[in-house]
Image (cartoon, rainbow, N blue to C red):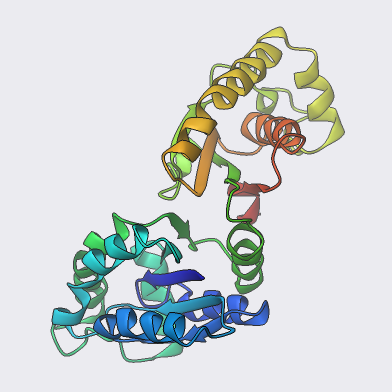
Length: 287
């Protein structure tokens, strides 16, 4: 049985994630009291039910006494021989969550405990921090549309085989901050920058003029080869340590040229060796 526990701050896209899993055949439960999860799973195992894929959303709508039990429940399931369990945590920037709640005018679950919406959003972050620290996969939905999030859930969670590692390469610009959902970060700012060539500035690392420019640079090839060797050596160790997801951040100054190109090259290489490799270009979502 595969169990996916979805958690995260209100407004981060948990309902969308749950619906994406339901669309591909998961039995989904929203706002499940955490203390009921062990009994639910035990009942399904005892009845030899046909339900082999279950997703449950457990978040700050729980009573705090229930929510505090979730880390221990998660650890117990991790050692269960009949269950494969993953904890998926969704989040977004404070300002993004504030805009989403302001636009929908929905009542925040923490509204009764604090004075205003910004404080409610921050209080929820603190409340869920122990759960976020346990996440097998964290997704920052700040710049993701509903459709992007659905695709990410389907590709990385639903379509990943039990024995495989889901590997995602994410390009970004350091001037916009390091993504909060990456596991390791590599800096491409030492490579030749197409931005300073006027005729290349309007293109990205996916466009042929920039590809041709970077293809001619020895340092670029050496960087990519070194990263391929490093990741090829250490990714198997992540798998041996029961890691199901790894997100590799590739950064440059603006996240338009060098990081995009290197991300594309690395993903193309590892797609020939792994069955679940994905690409995300964070800053290209801004344009």
